[in-house]
Length: 332
Image (cartoon, rainbow, N blue to C red):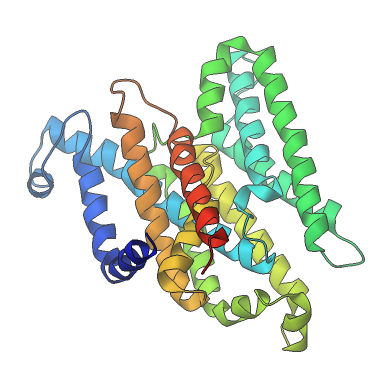
């Protein structure tokens, strides 16, 4: 079994960029109406219903699912480094719980004609509020201890999750929409939804590469990083807030999607090793592949019924983490 995984890792390391491109176009070609990759490019020069379906409806969705997987995976990778905790993901800090509460609050307002609001904007606002609240609760004498950060994240998650469940019980008419948002969906995504999340991802990627060597040092521990001249608190604050902003930008458009930020960094380290300059690229590619495939499965498995994509990622992520833990526990 170990020889098989070693061969799989070596092959994946070489072919990952090619797989990324191939999977993107396969996802674009699969749906209610299947279109061959070659015909998709021919449709660019035609005026037809198929062209509108592929390039105006399906393309933004596939692109957004790919970018979301890249973003959640990279935020998880960085958070696991700065917190020196392999079980950390973007949702530890309460961002997703805040975003889901904001979305449900917006749906509640609209359905009950209380006021006109933008659901994504309200979701984004509460995502940032939740993230900042976690920081404020965790801060001690100008620093953010990791243990306090984890505990604060749990408290904030509990607070906003409880508020979300209260809203779901108060407004039965929004129960279906609310549950879909809580488990994530890319349905209804347009090209107008992509610029802000994409910009936040670009900033995060550039920052991750620029500080990759310092992230390597952070994995050794905070004391060791300080002794090597790293501004530990400054680095944690910078990536914590930038990661929260990036997560909020995507969650406010797609809802909560679990396990991607947790499992993708582990996959990337298996393929590319512990050095962040190498595994950052692997994280981006694997995250994009994983979530875009999960979304394709979500919209095609039970067609015409669409499964929330977070359910698909959970079914894939949980067994992967179980296998990973068993591999680590087995004797060398």
